[in-house]
Amino acid sequence: MTQRPDRLTFQLAYGDCDVVGIAYFGIYYRWMERAYTTWLYSQGIRSGEMQEHLGILTVGISSGATYVQAVKVFDELTCQVVLDRIGASSYVIGYEFTRDDELVTRGQMTYACRDLDWKKAPVPEKLRAVLESLPAPRFDVPKGG
Picture 1 (cartoon, rainbow, N blue to C red):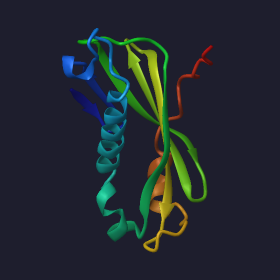
Picture 2: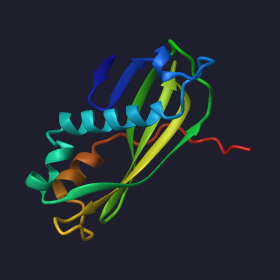
Picture 3: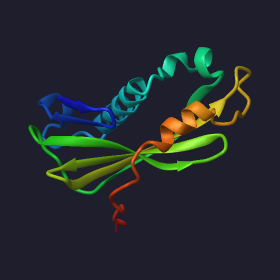
């Protein structure tokens, strides 16, 4: 696995795949979370310490993934973290999984900011600035049918 602050590259193993050797859908969530928290850490923000340092908590309120192409055991994938949207009190992080620079899966997670009483809170300026440093999405997600 190689790393860059806003992306992870990794090779699938048998444990990532189903019985016929195709990537199990749930593995994408593990890599999305890893890519996001690793990127935040590289920016000086630890998810588990936002309460102490930023006065907020972030709560995942929705997630999803679109599977564009099948990936198989031993394929090398790159997960690129991108900024889909930032609002007043929430933001959406996108995840572009590519193989040989071709989109294979597109994921997203929506996070809401909450104060220490679990009430809606604005995205702190420090977090907003870090989020705005992420690249824009490169790929449009094909509409399935």
